[in-house]
Image (cartoon, rainbow, N blue to C red; front, top):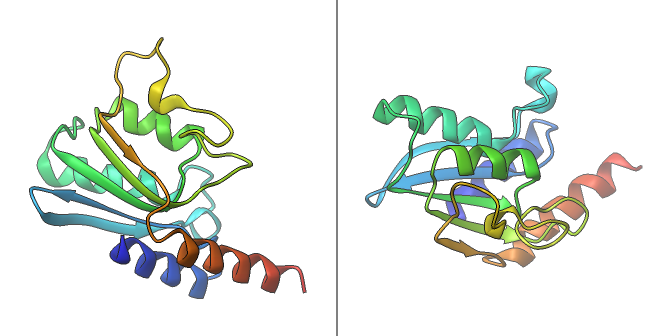
Length: 144
């Protein structure tokens, strides 16, 4: 999670919403990135999407059956949809996102019974205070 937070800090410095993500397979970090929606002019350039793409390219398969995704903030519905399509087994996130989180805050796609795949492990609140503080600092700065 500390690596995801480091990515979030890079996003903050770049003027992006400070969310960072990493993917680990067999104890090796194979992808790390941060939100790039503004710099890429791409509404889908969330950190989770970017690391899912990089990991799939790295292993040569869109199914990430052995991967663990760490992200600094609870994923949105778009990102959860991509994780489900990637057959991701594990998600660990930092701060909860009450307004748009899709792992129990606003929605819960991680346990949606009608979907064809479910994440086996979802754990939230890991280093949440640090993630929340970074988000608050970013939006406080933007509102000045």
